Amino acid sequence: MRFLVRRLALFALALVFISILVFAALRILPGDVASVMAGLNAPPERVETLRQQMGLDHSYPRQYLDWANGLIHGDLGRSLLTGRPVAAQVGERAQVTFPLILCGLVVALALGIPLGCASALARSPRMRSFSHMVAIVGGAVPALWSGLLLIMLFSKGGGLVGLLPSQGFPIQGWDHPGRALESLILPALSTGIIVGAGIMRYTRSLLGDMLSSGYVDMGMACGMTRTQAALRIGLRVASPQLVSVVGLTMAEMITGVMVSENLFALPGLGSMLVTDVGNRDLPAVQSELFLLAVFFLFLGLLVDVAHRLIDPRLRGAVGQEVDA
Image (cartoon, helix red, strand yellow):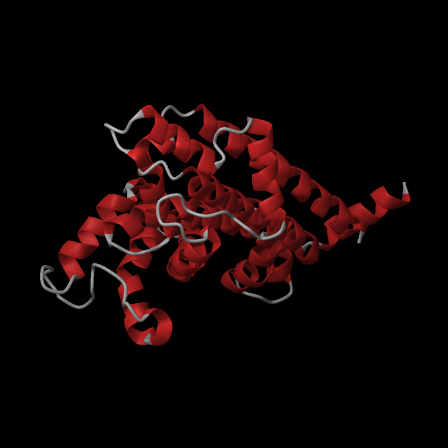
């Protein structure tokens, strides 16, 4: 409990710091939302009226406190361009983005961990070299290129093998789960393959270290084969580090998902953020950036807690620290 309280306190302090940083960074950017909304040839009186209506004439500390008070009460503000609550817009777009992240993570884990294990356990030098080349090439390909390649190969109407839709998301959303999931397959593959190459490298490195340790030798002395000892003992001992890699992978996938959403015309958080930045919709942008930061911090918190649950040595270290 003391460990959780300390981590939650750090989490809250990090949220306060991130909120200040996001608010200050957006105020440094050139341009004015009121001028954008009023138009290029608008008279100064019109611009000033809009600034007063939006509260942009207040001091920065007051603007920040008003925004922070809304965040505490679950109010992310209203979009200056659409007039809708930002929370409602984020909720709609999250129904596309988070399933896409989950699907991409499934693809990455399904490719990265088995291939990494096979690469570490391979005895043939040619097989090792080939897997090393695959990992490097897969990690070096940008998400944009992999998405374009998948579109040329598998998109309906324009690909060599027209199997899957490459543009848009069903208007009915998840009311038709089959069509919704079908529209996410190509974007999930475009990000999952690249991230999976990184997981493959980490898995191969971690399992390779375990093969040269005493854990695998002990398992083989108990009657296990080399492969069984590596997978049952070595992979389990390396699981805390692997959990950290998966947490970092989910954070890394945010960037790839933003690219995929714009490439595949998906109405997700990434395309929403790009549109709001271009339109200088300041309240929407700062709330969206803050929510992304919350997501990153929450992933870090989950990874930290998972380490304590998986590795009993860390739980013992925490207990000794408390006793001291």
